[in-house]
Image 1 (cartoon, helix red, strand yellow):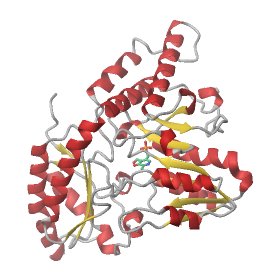
Image 2 (cartoon, helix red, strand yellow):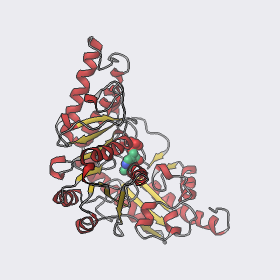
Image 3 (cartoon, helix red, strand yellow):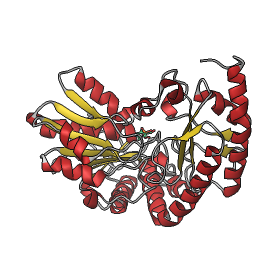
Length: 391
Ligand SMILES: Cc1ncc(COP(=O)(O)O)c(C=O)c1O
């Protein structure tokens, strides 16, 4: 495979589609382009592949195919999980529990609900981004309808204890959703073991295509639709199915799950090398848990920078693509809510660096990035001190 000339360490934002996923998708653009609802040859072929791939996605997370609903990605799955839970359980009350480290795909729907009479309690994590069952126990009220907790943070990489948190919610008869967008394909997921009612995944975070995701729901009721129209997905989600997207999602997930042990060991080693070399630069601090974190995810805050974007720009000039937290807030002038929730002061929370790896990254790339950081962090600090960089 030809490697791009740049070093790409922003895989938590998005990943290149794997060769196998791409090859699996291609026939569904021209040879097998049918609309799965059509009853002729092309339609039935397309329908057959969507149902086969649904089974395959289900198998990869320990579910059954009737529990998988295809979506346009993580954002839609998160929005839908929340609205479905409210529709099913809304009679119980008007209270929701989530955490201060969720992605906006969860936080924004909660904000909107707060505008229409709902109340959301956001649990503050400890300094590593973890929350405990005791904290959840305290937050749950008799009128709580849903608990939604991210499985692994996109900003700081910490993996949360979903099994225990879900058991706590269930003891109180509360539905549980997890945003597993960063976790799927990277760490093992078995929905039965976890016990969750709802779970969101997105293909482009594990080398599948953008615009393809899935919602797992074991609630014994077809999810209340967010999108109305032709009644596809058993009436749960209208719109002609994204057949190549479904194929790419399922192929990439299968590949990621098959290679997970091997990839995870290798990526953990590379990540730890990257963490060790970065922390040798004075005034750099790891964010998130030191070990209980996503295999390819290293995140830091750095003293003496006015904004993480200044370092990202210098790295970019040097041919290295990284990010300063989540992709959606790359150029934001506000500190990441996640980093502030960890108790970091605003100045440090503004100066974040996230390096996220995929199985396509190499040890040489890690060494090159380590050297570049040792050179560029002092450079950006100097420029900041001399007012060449400000907010
Ligand atoms: C944790 C998390 N949830 C949800 C999303 C949204 O997923 P998508 O880009 O597929 O809409 C992302 C993507 O950045 C994410 O990292």
